[in-house]
Amino acid sequence: MRTAEALIRDQLPPSNWPTIPTLLRTAYRAADEIIRDNPILQVKSAEDNRGRIIQWSVDLRVETAIKNGSLPCDYSWEHFDKPTGRYLQLRFPHSTASISQVSRPDRQPRSVVFRENARLRNQGVFEDFDDGSEICGLPHFLIIHGYQNLSFAHIALPSADSRVGFEFRTPNLMSIPHEIQSDPKMAPTENTDFDPDELGALKDEIEKWRKDHGGD
Image (tube, rainbow, N blue to C red; front, top):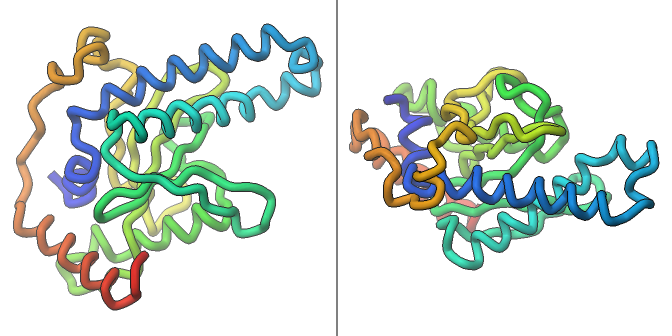
């Protein structure tokens, strides 16, 4: 197992993965109901922005899941580089994450400043970690889903060397059997086929960076 996959499994364990398709289905359904019940959201110009309603609905469900303990992390509302709004940042012990709608599950979301900066923080952490590359920030991964129809959802760690590919991406979480989504305790046993010393060394380096820079 590569370090990128090991880190994601460490930060967001597979036993929690079934929460994601469950909350996404609920969010998409709620968005559809809001649109159906509000004629102003049914005009053609509003139809082209259905993704916004989905985004807000997903943010609410994720925030709720964090508050009730279904997702094992903290969160904050971070401003975009230009003061045009905020996005939901998930905060794990040794990483951060954000949520994006994408049209293709094999490609990173479109580049904006905060995603580009987060992507670059992954540089040197995984492919070249054994070569002594320095940590330059908390690693950042994505929860991607899409798009107008909820046909896929993945946890993915963007490649720092490409604006397209990923260091690691889970299988489609929407394909997790329903009985596992209903009872996450039935999730498959975690894959431990990796060197724990390597993961531990990475986490130590992240902690050192955090101490040296007064936080994250």
